Image 1: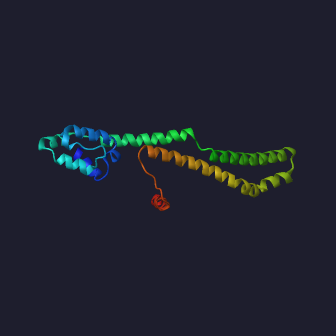
Image 2 (image 1 turned 90 degrees about the vertical axis):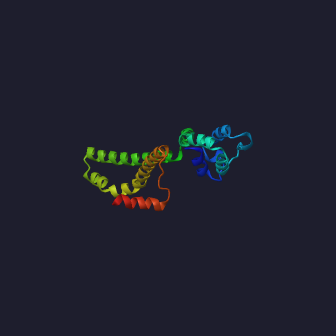
Length: 191
């Protein structure tokens, strides 16, 4: 991107704030500008464009030929932001949801273990009434364990979505953020 494209893009905004490496850009332009026309540290895009247009044609051509790696700086800055987010998450991972999932697992496992042990004991002693009672009791057990199993499914689904969001963020992709966008995506998938 040359200076004129950057100046139009920034407009009335401050170059140092809106352009990654904006200070270096101002320094590079100030090398070409005469002493009386040097840009201040808080120069805007309009100021940059005015200063560049006030130069003789040879120096304007020099500025136009000089390309600045604004996109590379923007990408680097975005990657650093994602890296910082992931590093902060690694330092303080979530603790509530894993504990809830762990408790749900133990409730579901204990209920399953008790039922299997009761059935195995009934088969071992040959008590048909007990076998019948255990096998016919599945609706009761299902109604008790279903919320815990549902919480486990939700927990692992959330983990899967979080991993997808991290990968998308690292690649610069955005996800649907509002409920309406998600509903729209659901209908598009059905086609």
